[in-house]
Image 1 (cartoon, rainbow, N blue to C red):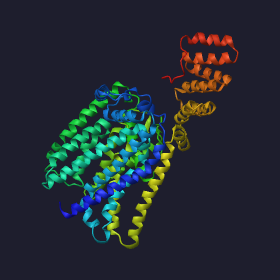
Image 2 (cartoon, helix red, strand yellow):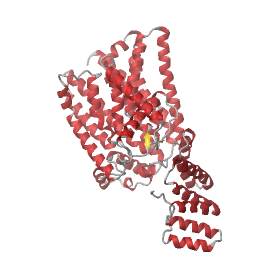
Image 3 (cartoon, rainbow, N blue to C red):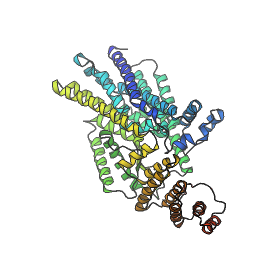
Image 4 (cartoon, rainbow, N blue to C red):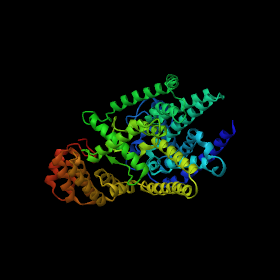
Length: 542
């Protein structure tokens, strides 16, 4: 190994270790977080599939889907956690934190492989500190950015951090392969095999990494400079095993998701709306990357797109055109844009599978390109600047890291439990679902009147927005009043629910409230309407 590469390898190793340790320190606060009542029950708390870690579980994890997704390694990781921790959330959070810290180190190693061509101007003389500082900056801009909090502090998003280990490992191994092959060094084939194997494992953790083959082609073009018109067929052929695995997983994922009816049909959500949503989502991701304020865990898709969605989509179209038309003068800009957009393609709304418009967690892989590109840009500015200008750029980089760490540390506190999480959403954007889910938590804690107050707000928002399932909220509020001994209020709420949808269980629970009020004849009539439906209040499909 030549001397520059020895220096780069040594610098990358030190920077990777520091990035992992700093991320670990920032996210240790998540150890004090609980499970939340948003997907955690499906993935862990009420998931019987993870309770027994045996060969039958392994077989079922790899041959069947759950919740519409084929993610055997994610289910296996939860099963291992359950084996050691039961339903103690601290162990699950510890696993997420350690995996994310490892990923921060991997981002540094990937950055090293992509930025080595500039190490000469960053590693000599008075700027000998600069190359490892740039690598560390890349890892921290990504690892402790507030957009990462959701993926780390939310137990359900184990799939993000687990996929990240294998996806980043696959990219790093491929970059090692390209370097060894071009320089005639031993181990090129083994590095390729490791990259392909890690890519397959990433798909087993979360299929979002299907775009990695296309990302590798972009990296071959810039900054590696291995892709040209003369060898494009050769380079594409080099990726065919990756593309084959990706296509197989895409087909399986769409088939499974369609079978579970979790994908929104094009009849309900037409293509032109999906295109507008894609553009506005990309704009939101860029805005949140540069200005991470107002981050929450749920951004609902509006029933009617506001004008801002169309304007944002137009701005993204203009930015995309600018990147493509200026690719000869600014190849790094186009490469960074493509490496940011490609990992977002599976979640931009073209395969809409929920009511969210976008989500912080979707930036887990896309954020890598912007972090490395941003660190490289700052490194170049420092190497070219002198005197106070250099000090200013360094001060801005340090301030950005400190600000990211402080905001992330603050946001982790919102994930302490379901009440703190939904209270933050209500503070930032008072949506009906946030009031409903906070009410659900408060009801579980026996705070029935507080739950009823939240449900009143949820009902008001639902009626304003024309939410067809508002009858559920009336029934849940009636149940809260019943438990609090406010039987008259319970009768009123159950009556409102029955007028909207006469569910048999509603008659039974109104009957119990009427009986407590001494109105036996009315109660008997309700019990007759209920028949055998004497179960608890459950959410009814419209």
